[in-house]
Image (cartoon, rainbow, N blue to C red; front, side):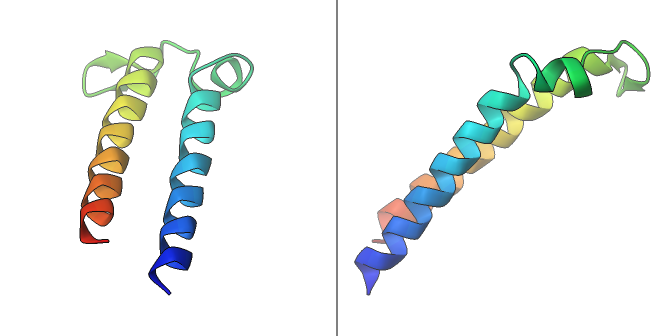
Length: 71
């Protein structure tokens, strides 16, 4: 049973990594985050988009590591 759970966790993390990569590269970034306005916490949207994905990736890695140590 734990092996099946770890596969799902690994698959979910891999899907997140692919989506994060797509969100910060062309064409997804050009469609969603490539604007100056509105400002988010004083940062232009284009910079806040990248910073947000970096923070989200940090959280995803921390959660993945936490679940990996529990196995």
